Image 1 (tube, rainbow, N blue to C red):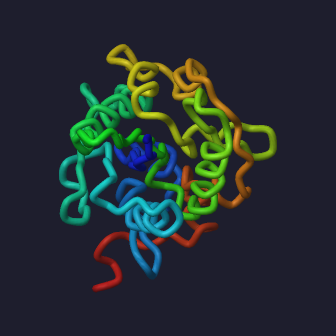
Image 2 (cartoon, helix red, strand yellow; image 1 turned 60 degrees about the vertical axis):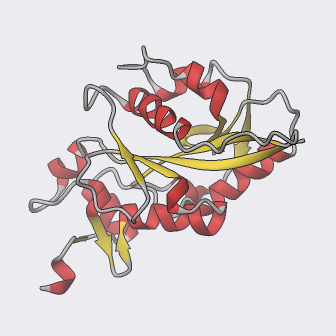
Length: 220
């Protein structure tokens, strides 16, 4: 018997260039912007726990090693740093492989699936629900579900079969787009609520979503 085992990969290591260029004052990188209840990264972890039932111990964060994360959360980095989101996903999938459970000798085995998301999407939870429903209601040959909003792909709201994704996002992923690597997979599109794909790219986005404080500011 095969059961699905769910993990998550959160990209949190970009340069946040558009945020820094549009902010009225110096700001931290996107994962550390915060609202009254936590940072963007903390929101991403909570969305995965609440909506996808993936605890932080099953999450891999791809970003700087000094990011504040819950105990037991894996942090890794693409090599070299800033070599692109597809390379970051490759590094994250390799790290997920080190979290996998040993197979049961009695014949029951698990099949790992991985949510792909980013640390700047604080309302992503309903999208995770849509992705899982899409995977669990399709044929066994499907390797991925990709979120779609208004006919547009949301590559960082995806759910992928770990073994197939590890091949698609291989060691040669530096500089490649996520879409080009997802396209190598046998996938289905999963309609997601519009708000689930909302992300913080610019300072205007941060204001719209309410993430205009910086870490430590609330204690000053």
